Image 1: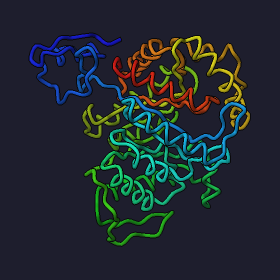
Image 2: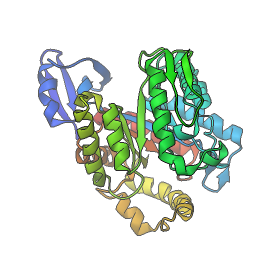
Image 3: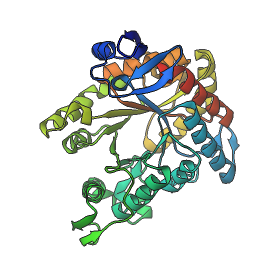
Length: 385
């Protein structure tokens, strides 16, 4: 948990979540900025912050109740506004092309959210870049950055749901080659107004400009990864922030892959501060651990067993669920105190993480339950992570 340190220069208490940063909080010599105040008269040091957010796939299914698409979309936007007001740092929207999800046009949803919010960062989670045109993706998110006044990010990846490939006419045999080429083009567009480029999967670009340009000088692009060592090494060699999706097993088993990312980044000349690590996992927060489990487990078991039939996973059992909510398991389900403690444990097991995003609307929870969970995250978890 966080250590309270009194800073004599700023005459404030700091909630320091890392022992190695205690001297920073004590003397303030390296403190870049102070963030939101925490009662009573406590602040978080800029170096000690783990950003906390939500990722959503815009599901229209809540338990046995299927909402209309209009109702589901309106409720999703209400949750993003609520997260903004509750002090969460980031909200992400995924990309799927399936009946049960409404997130096929990620940037459109985020633009609607940008018009209703003022401070929360807005990101894709993830953009299936392999099946998209990097020029159009950049233009969409640059426009979003203008609407949001500089709050836009992208998490790009190959996608674990592969329905986009046949839909847009791509061959799954080119799964990795598509991504390598399109990521290279996207980064070139981000860093250069005029682009000269040629490749296999898209017509050449002969020294043409790409507009609009975003408000941010260098709009953040994170690399979304699963369990491929090559993906971790690629992110490090490019100096891109890393978003790791861990949805099963023990979080600590990814430490060697995160180390591989940091080693590749160091060899490429990037500083530790440039090599940010984010973690995306399922979770849910309620007033007590017992309530969180009782509300989360039925829908989780139903929906993840269904998904498992598509992907060859075994059905969810209560024993397997109990392991996943245990000290080392991936699920962050419990009371605010339990989840905050587990977040810091996960961070330690991975050598430190800079961002965590909850995937909550995949367990049949109601809009009211999700709204209350967002409140608890803002009130009782963010101040101590």
